[in-house]
Length: 420
Image (cartoon, rainbow, N blue to C red; front, side, top):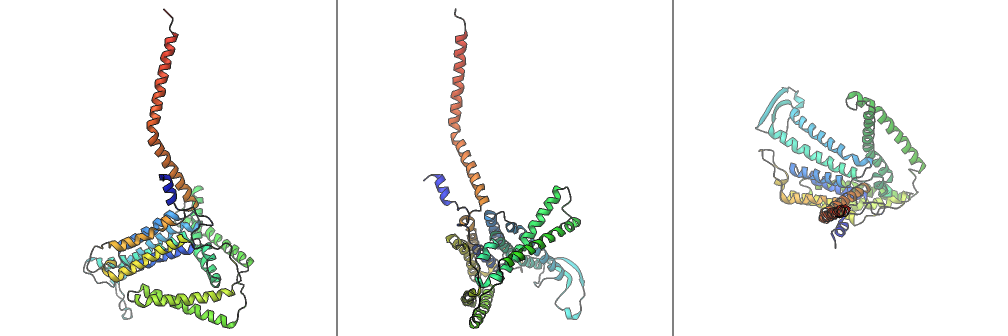
C-alpha cells in the first residue's frame, strides 16, 4: 500500500447529505466537555478544555453564519471573567487571605446589609479564587459556543421528536438570533470600511444598530409568514387520557432529568444522580413518544445517527465520565486550593482524558470548503515531493542538454571553416 493510499484511507469523508454528522452528536460532545468543565476549578484543565473545543471548531466548522459565533462566545467568556474579578475587588471575596495587594476605601453600609462590603482589603487569595471561578464560567461558555458553531440548527430541529417540534422551533429561532446578529454587524462594518467611514466608536455603533434592528425585524416577519404557510401549530385529536398521561410522564421525566443532572454536577450527589437521571430519561422519552401522536408532520430525509455520530458523542461522554471519576479519586488535583497560595499542577490522566475530546477533529466529516483546502494542500505537498525526488533526474537531463548543445555548436564551427 502506497503512502497516498494510506492517506486516503485515514482521511475523513466529505460532508454531504448522506454523510453529514448528526447535529445532536455535536451537542452531546459539547455538553460532555461542559460537564467536565463544571467538575473542576484547575485552570490548566479548564484551559485545556477550551483549547480542545477551539481546535475541533477550527478543524470542522463551515462558512455558515452560525459557525462564526464561537469567537463571540470566547469574548463573552473573557468578559465574564473580567466582571468576576472586578466584583471580587469591589465587593470582596468569601475566601480569607493574608497577602494584601491593595486596600480600597471602604464604604460603610447599614446593619441590614451585613455580610456585604464595598471596598476594603484586596487579597491575592481572593483574586485567585475569583479567577478560578471565572475561568470555569468562561469554559462553559466556550463549550456551548462550540456546539453553536458546529451544529446546524435547522438539522437539529428536524431531529426533534414531534412532541417538541413547536418548542424546538422557538429554541432554534432563539439560538440563531445571536449568530445572525453577529453576521449582520460584521457585514455592515465591512460595508462602512469600503465606503471610507469609521467602523469604531460610539457614533459608528449607533449608525450600525438601526440597520441591524431592521434586518432582525425583516427576518422575523419572513419567518412568521413561512411558519403560517407551513401550518405551524396544527395538532391531531387524541383522547383526554392520553393527553394527561403524556403531560405527567413528560413533566415528571424532565424534573427527574434536572434532579439527576444536578446530582451529577454537585460534589455529593453522584451516588443518586445517575439513577434519577436514567429514570427521568425513560419517563421523558415515554411522554415524548405519546406526545408525538399529536403532531401531524412528516420528515423528509431524516438525518441518520451513524458510527461517526456515536464516536463524536461518545468522546464527549467519555471526557465527562473521566472527570467525574477523577473528582472522586483525586479531588485535590481538580480543585487546587486558593488558601494557601499554591501553583496548580496538571494531573496527567485527567488531562489525557480531556484529549479524547479531540476525536471529532479526526472522525467527523470534513466540510466542503475544508475538503478543498486539504486537497489543495495535498497537491502542493505531492508537487513538492516530486520536485525533491525528481530534482536529480531533471538536473542530469539539463546537464545532458547543455553538453549536447555545446557539441553541436562545436561541430557547426568545424564544418564552417574553409578547407586548407
